[in-house]
Length: 427
Ligand SMILES: *Cc1c(COP(=O)(O)O)cnc(C)c1O
Image (cartoon, rainbow, N blue to C red):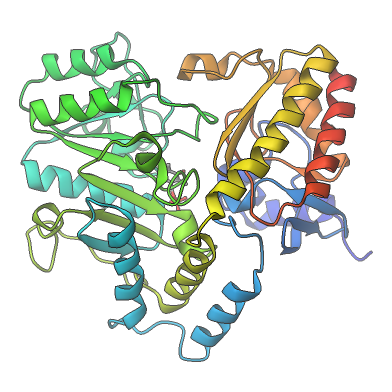
């Protein structure tokens, strides 16, 4: 063994901020040393010490067909020898956009970006340009990437303007962001009433995964749809995580509610950096080069990323893919819930398609505040016991976890028995 996670972490901290390039990877919520991954294949990742983990991080969502799937790798290799980037149109951009238009009824035009952050940020600019209004409504606990307007939390008092949730975001800018509560339609109605004719859009994760997995209550998304239509605001579904993950057609397919625009990412890049916005031509064509809303990206529509996305969509578009995924993930979730009951710990788990949540509370949360009400100390201990058992979960109690089509019955059985031992140990 030539190196260790510990050694690599101290090396990384000397040159990378906190040793990482995305904050949550630093393990701050669980403590301890982040694992430095050397390689990943199928349902597994191996760290630099050669330890194997059953992976439920899935690169935070994209790896729905497993790591290094031969079909995806071949597509990437074939694309790579044709050149890494052109800065000019390529045919795969149209091909991937045609697939999105075929899957999502309201999507007539697509714009690709290089990340989900850019997609969410550009969707908001487009909504503001289209409606000629400045305010936006988002939900506490929903994450839409790191654009300034979206790093905003609720101010004091339900109807107060938003305040920055990060240093470096001007309060003047945050004031255009109004913050409502997920699954609380009255909180949205109140904001519309307090700010008539000035809300450009409501942006929401229709099935949030960034305050752990939370299901939309019956009627909530339908209610948002109705409120947006009534007030002339656009409804934007951020399906960066839930798209091609809870179902091929995302949360909007599961709940049967049509947004005006959708943001995508993660799975559509198959593990390469991609984001996308999709919507009706009348809205989308407000964007440059056809309209006044500026948007651009040097590497947008990158041929390697398009190839990986297309190959991934090939794998997950087949008949029965999501039925099988949903059934296998249900088997895992049922096993975890049984382990929790046997251990006598306040614990619960749920899933939709290949997106899942486990919670150190007796029932799955239905709101941001409930998602905070978990036994965090127990989670931390459980987390490290599971790692030691060779099970890699997202290192935070408020993140969803991700299942793939290549997690086998054996992987599920191993995970459940590891969970049983770990839950017993923390009981
Ligand atoms: C991951 C995520 C983003 C941000 O995507 P990046 O590619 O990390 O910029 C935006 N919205 C949601 C819902 C996400 O889960």
